[in-house]
Image (tube, rainbow, N blue to C red; front, top):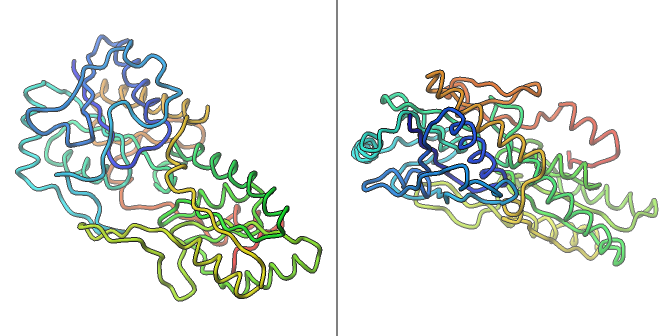
Length: 357
């Protein structure tokens, strides 16, 4: 038995833990694992891959990124935007399938987010033996309660807020921290609560900068002369627009810059010195937390179990502390967003955090 594995889309902490889990579990069955390099691109003839043995995965648990490389560009189509999907061209699929057949790959484990798993679903419907492993630091896939990489991203946000607290207090400033979160504000919400933020602005909850400014004035009147604001990159501006850097050829925009916009606006409204900081790819890099190492390993082991049982077209899923699986078609295009009236939002408000609404 020979199986393949690839990482597709953005990188995040815990990818190597998945590879570790797959290789370890496969070796126990006497299987050979082929790691395709740079996502789906590694499937194109003549094939760009390497054989992964247990000795090749020694020590990779603690490493960020992925030893296989990954990409969100190339010949394989990705999601164009929220709910807007493009299929992979037939000639590309045919070329990649020849590589699969020549290498006698009996199962292909695709570790990726919504866009990559949408491609995986197309391949499965065309007869490929596909198994999905969810990967998104935004933690926004409906079919799984948590994805690896999310906890590491939140920890990075918390560390940043811990550091910003001291400089904000020293200068009596407003500090605005921009974090990742295109459609879902889970990183901002979890990181903001854990890091002691005073204001959290999310894509799911429309906010008014005037209300945020009033909240900051009230804090000043109460003797709290510094304020920490966390804003998700996908939070909509008061006029309903998104802060964008550029638009790629596929039609999906690169988000960024809302932190600076909010900082300028709050300084105008309050008269307080304000600074902004964007974490960006710092949230994707670095060593994974213990939770992400364990979760990634468990996901990899479950993927091999699904291959052993011939249960293709399924995605590994984590629910109620248990790792199982769901059909890929039930997982893609269904985002798990922060509920404006949900328990976590209510908890944030209960401890005095302003959400701008």
